[in-house]
Amino acid sequence: MSTKGRFDFGGVWVPVLALAIASAAGCTKPDSVGGTGGSSAASGGHPGTGTGGTPTTTGAGGTPTTTGAGGTPTTTGAGGTPTTTGAGGTPTTTGTGGTTTAGTGGAGGAVVMKDCATKTKVAIPAFMDFENYNGMVDASLFATAFGGTTVNTGTSYAGLDAPWGDGTATESLQMLAGHASNYAASESVTQASGWGMGGGIWMGCADASAYKGISFWVRGSSGTGTFSFVIGMDSTDMPDSTGAGGGTCPGTTTTCKAPEKDGIPLTTDWAQVQILWADFTPGMSGGTAVVPDGNNIINMTWNVGLAYHLDPTDPDSGTYVAIPGDLRIDIDDIAFIP
Image 1 (spheres, rainbow, N blue to C red):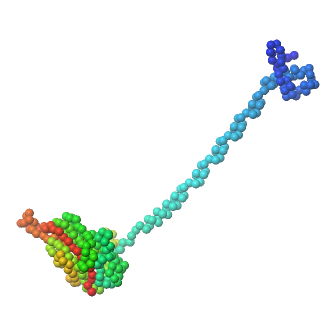
Image 2 (image 1 turned 120 degrees about the vertical axis):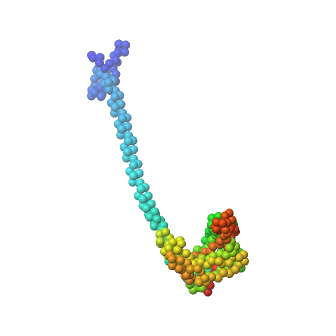
Image 3 (image 1 turned 45 degrees about the vertical axis):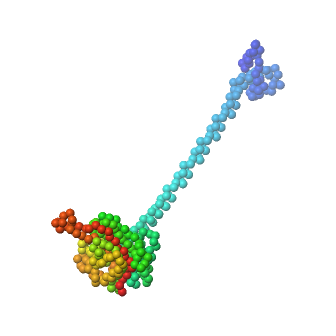
């Protein structure tokens, strides 16, 4: 008998897994072949030994399971890229930005007009009395309405200009007690040494041609004991740099001059000044004389000057220089003369 499929343990041949292998190989039942059962079992043991675990290991191997349940397809399917692309913010940003910028930019410009493109007819003599000053803001910010049927009312406006000077000292503008009133405009400078100082009133274009002239109360001090008063008009004011705004004078700074009244007395006591339109020295509009009549008034200004004498350092030169000094002017109750 063949010894294949048996193991020798000390000279004894032992059949291995006979029943299992015989059954697997299609042999007859062991109880019908009693004598050869051991041999069949012994032969059956070899396939058990040779093919034992392998089919089971192969069939139950984890590899197919690992491959089938691999996470890669899931990761790929749930990738975030499509979502990110679809929800991109670019369309929203573009739509909002363009609309807002365009709307704001269009509203930026201001209409430029000539000095007297609109004009207010003066309805009553009283023009500015400073009594509506609130006592809180800087005097240079004071403004009031005019053109109404009572003082400090109407649809046009006027206010105080900051004083100007010769650059040798700093001018001051205040609201102080007025002529029998609470407030008056007060301008002053200490030890000016160039020519002096000036001040004035800005205003919308006014038609006061129904009146004979202008009046106001004044007090102060100057080097000469006098001051000058000027009526600005659109015809004596030069256009602005574009020509769209400003006045209509076709000349230059030397040929565009407003009508002026010089040599008005200025003392430390309040005094009323009355100037008829005919009392003003005519102005100039590009070489043409301009006689004021109360129409097209765009501002009022005044100048307070220093006195002059021969240069003390060289008396024989014939050169005159200003005498340094303190200057002041207070003005109140500006009105037109009926």
